[in-house]
Length: 167
View 1 (tube, rainbow, N blue to C red):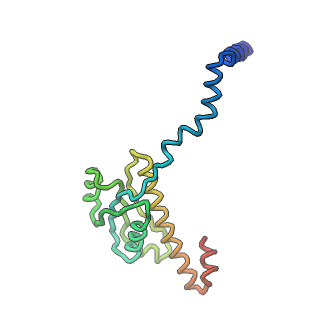
View 2 (cartoon, rainbow, N blue to C red):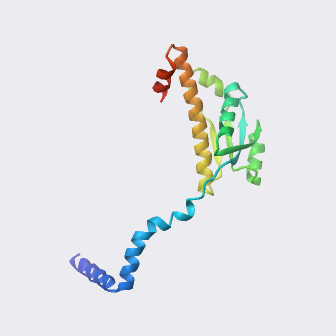
View 3 (cartoon, one colour):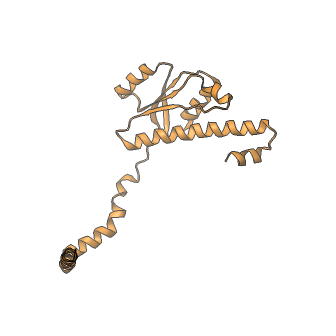
């Protein structure tokens, strides 16, 4: 092991003696964190086209769809009750994701149960995937918070306290 460290030390000294190699090592170490992300800075992706499959057709599912569509991250290009049709459109490139609102979505929420939505997304381009997931999380989180606040208001909480409790 001592021979290994001696060899490493000798090679490191050789690199530092070579001004070009030393400059490259130090310059790369300092410049890399600033130069590599620069091309990605202006890359802001908005209005990713998605399809929504609403199997519930309830007031809450329509409210969630409006929230999804209101997001600057997503643009709902089609609504349907047929997942197979939207899957075909996905493979044709007409949308980059499919959001499925399941049957009994509102009923589960009204019973206080968890109601999950399914999100199918194009993961071949990370920014598209990230925007779709983020948009769905924001919309479903907002809907969940709204339901929670309304529930507390019905119990007699004041608005400020209900908002603070949910957050």
